[in-house]
Image (cartoon, rainbow, N blue to C red):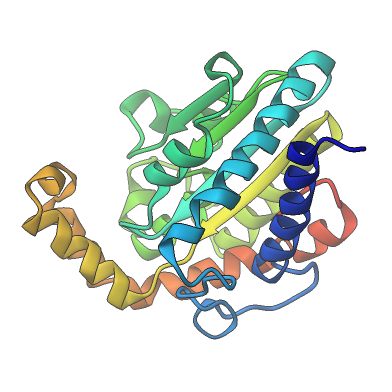
Length: 259
């Protein structure tokens, strides 16, 4: 007879697969984050005490897959984690990656580019931190910021001192193409991309910002920039929708790229 513990893990693996199905962006689809994906979606888990079990099972499965990835040594995995401010990127990494071997995971948080990074093309700093074969790399904020935040804050483009030719029309269309080409090169060479966008409602974002002010343990996470960026909340939705839709043809052609 199968080990009951193994059977329980297999059962939860099937349930987890069902839970994430409605959260995936289907190849070829056009989406509206506000209408198509409810930030309050709980996947049938209505009680907080019911959440830890599927999380523990997911961590167990992830640890097993990481061991296989490292043993094979021919592929790598890059997780691109995007979210609005207060979306929970750090907490997601902390909770989901607890069971994996630290030596096999490389997490990088990308803030505003340094002077050295500004002297290179916008994908250079991300290429410098790609995982090796057998590793899992995590981009906490990723190269997609270059068509999200930069689109909302075009003044960031001026800091790169780009030549006049690169400032001409179709800048965003060109960047979408360049990002897709860069990712295609990675997948062709055995690196799988898993892209996660942590959706957050305006109401929930407000509650989390207030927590950062009211709860002493969270004061360190609050900054004046939070207030300024919150005023731009409506502006972020359209670039995010465009970014998700921009890769639909490539996703359709390349099943190795998960969304």
